[in-house]
Length: 116
Image (cartoon, rainbow, N blue to C red):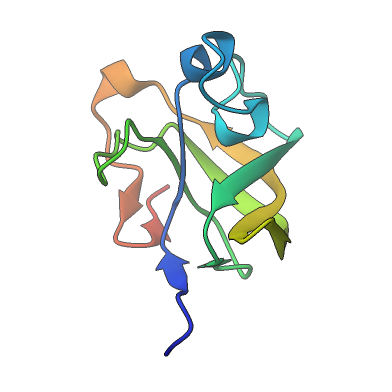
């Protein structure tokens, strides 16, 4: 028996349409409009660890580890593990540092380091 824990180099959330269709909670999705300096809540299934000492990418996922290019640079403000029934979740909040234009094709991260 072991401890199931995942270390994430990014925060991968679902498209907001998943919430609008009733398939996901709003906190599991990327907000429609990301604003620099604003703090947003997040919710992820599983016990996850995030880096607290700098910026890293906010990406969109449609599951199965399929990730978009970085949508924004964020910093995690808090992350808490808790249970609903027998399922472990991680909830917390993140602050948006920069929002990226996906059409510009610029590289915004090299590994976990932000390219400015």
